[in-house]
Image (tube, rainbow, N blue to C red):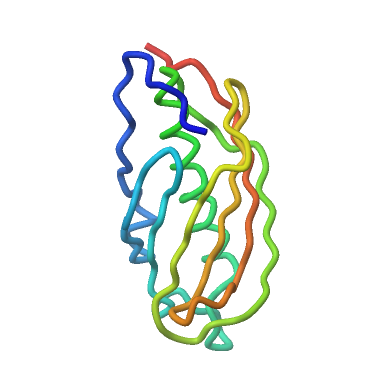
Length: 138
């Protein structure tokens, strides 16, 4: 599933301001898989549960990073065009793990499944993100 790099260096993840505020940590980064963690504490809504918006924000970030890593093998970059999520279970504490794996790695579009799990491995949320690959601007 991994394309051969075309004289391009794989893009390395750099956290943005929101990622840092949310406490996101990168665990693994490759074309095949991007994994990050995030604490529930500091990302809860008023009822004490992990905020659904926090799940979407971290899930979209991890899925987009995965797309940009793939795009970098083609000398391109990626921009998100669609994201959807289903929340399965809530969390009140602990660390969540966010894992993006490719469903489709094309030359124009990528689609990734992003799974968010709790420390017990239970699925909390499933996202699907599609990114458009674009030529890098000089």
